[in-house]
Length: 151
Image 1: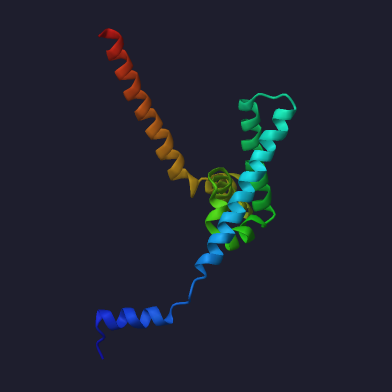
Image 2: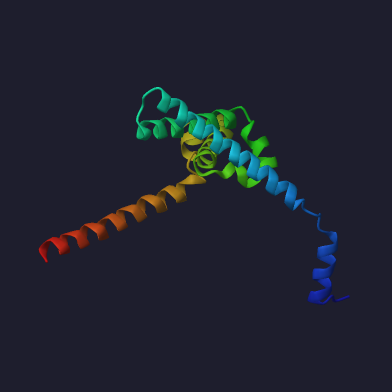
């Protein structure tokens, strides 16, 4: 018995589970905000220790990456991410998790063929694109600056 596209969409809509959008947004906002608050606290505390703003920000990045990888290794970060969703994708913590997760998952295959090879499975394309784009943009900028100096 053939079904029209409209009937199929109607049946699909009736059978799909309802997503608690508001609850998900609140969780994402709260967890993302907490991660940012932790980062800001690290910056403020290190500045009170008479470090420069640049040094404080660097320590903040290192701290957030360390905490993200530690929680990933303890299998806590994934549980938080299941509930908070996009809130855990605050760029630096989400990226650290994306690199650490495959490495931890494949550690039984050995250091080189397991952890090292799988570490950049997810992050590899991002790194490749980012590095390639920065080289191209830098070259273009260098050419334009050279042309301006000659003019």
